[in-house]
Image: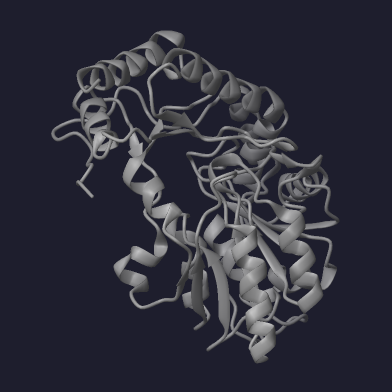
Length: 387
């Protein structure tokens, strides 16, 4: 795959997914400062956890320093340890699978489903059946909600419950999305969220562990605060981490959360405008949204699937970046990453085709129509040159 780098000698003028601030965040931060709750505790932190738990339709939540930390704690909570197998989606950002390595576990990667772009449920079900026949079930399934769209949960959950394998939902990219009317974050046994700077709701950095399982979330809270035992003395019997989110950052997230529906609607409008402007090119396909799914369209993603389109995604991306517009390739499959060399992969290479032929376009909720037109113009120019 060609190397698609940031433009040399300068930054972007149009970003892929910049933070979206509306002015209320400043007052929320000022109020938190006036309260003097600046450490990893305080009323804004508790309110943020409660609000996210309500949005995700779960009973318990604990806010942490990043989505990666949330995945780490979630995997540990379900019992993943050294030598265990964790089944993961290959088509995802590396932060999805890295925490398995933190715990000494071994990832097995599964291909994508054409229908949703998420982990292929048929392959997951078949893998669990074969593992069960050998008496070697994985310790956990780690499933990703990719680019703002939930995974196809029902067949995976049915099989996972049949075999007693916990499902960890990486909903880092999908807060506010739904599957068959159920919200992202509620689909697995435990889930991880992200509030990184490029997400629809941001705390600059941050994440959350959410679940109906009180014990798991309490354990995550305990480990996230250095696993300090109760009492006056500083006693530690288990390994812990400095993973707690600060009250100040929670105030920022709480202010933004009040308008999450508007932010999702804005991104969906950006997606639809791209599709209306570019959908006439032969072979150009946008990320599908099957019946019963409602994506946040966190990023607008498309494939150049024409017979002569090999390399077209690279050409479009290079031209966007030459004009200081941030286009990005889709996730490089994790089983192809040098970090995971030798890890098992189950599939036929659907995610590899996505990576070769796919592209993400600027998708921020505050993207102006004029800036979107600049993006559209570049894509049309490059596509027209090869048709």
